[in-house]
Image 1: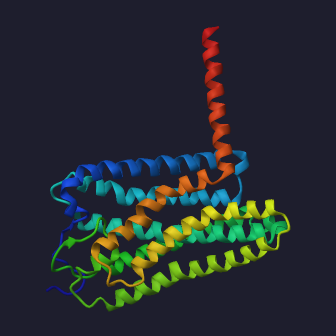
Image 2: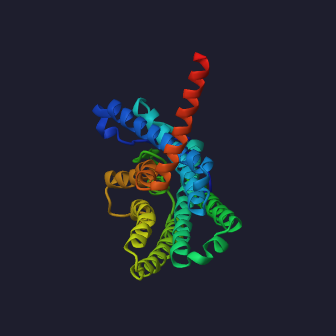
Length: 321
């Protein structure tokens, strides 16, 4: 066995869902459709929230950032899955595995922190509405978003460096559909105690602390809503928060279950399903949740599509003349 950062491994084998070998083509079609929905939905949400004047608010500024993160997250994970569904040798290079882990750890924590800033935004809007525009000014929104992205870079750099400077001198088979930390850690042939401690600590900082902030924010929001005398006001307040709560529950629940215990008792197949929840399904559902449950987004879509149709009709009438 070699010491230090040397490794016998030059590539890894991603088992993915190879146990379902008779359904590989069907799985390819399903995940290709999911990927297209994620890309189109998030791109459309970015476009609509960028061009419609009614959506130039802090909430939609953070939502644009979340959509960009979701586009990146799914692009890091799904294309390689699609390739492996149709490939006999489901391999990924050593550098490709490191890159995939880096960007998954960049987008994941960034999404978590953006969701936290969105909770703070809702808290300010509902609990301190008179000072909302002063508190949530453009500068603060930019700072919070930049801090979320920089935190993702820091987490990804430390995690990936710690993992890929270890010796991999045994099996190169990763029982997962992407290079995630727990299954890759299983292949390290030295003492992994330090990495496990860092992983648990990182989970507490990146997942549990934001969860605490979100919980406190929504506790204050709930108290404020219950004090409202108008039932219509309570309905609108609940409506603006419900989409965010659904996304937070989907993302933080699955992610914390995966990373809180690095070598947990979950079976590999259970871990894959949990990982699918926050790396594939949640980024795909985000634009659907925020658009279908949000009257402002649906109204913006109607206005944009209405202008497009109207301009096409004018163009057609010009041709007839």
